[in-house]
Image (cartoon, rainbow, N blue to C red; front, side):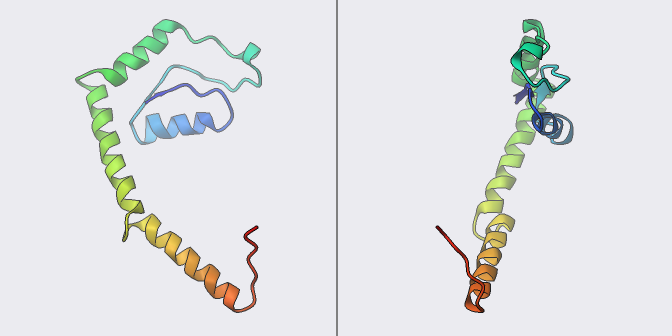
Length: 109
């Protein structure tokens, strides 16, 4: 993934994707700018280099794609029956139903 954060939390998301998960490359955006006029222009060469890194058949690009596939498998497993997210949603629903039966009202509208 090539990242190009422009606003607020996108810089944290970039750090997660690039530095923590290791599945992306940033184009070089460094600061939050409240309007388009105050954004620093990113050179086309920097963007092209980031794309080359991600798309490369060897080295970083191959490693990033392999890691992304592994994370995809883990994410799918989490939402399948028996996965952590699947089970957590089930527990939440059970708790909400239990609270509703003891007089705690849930409005769904």
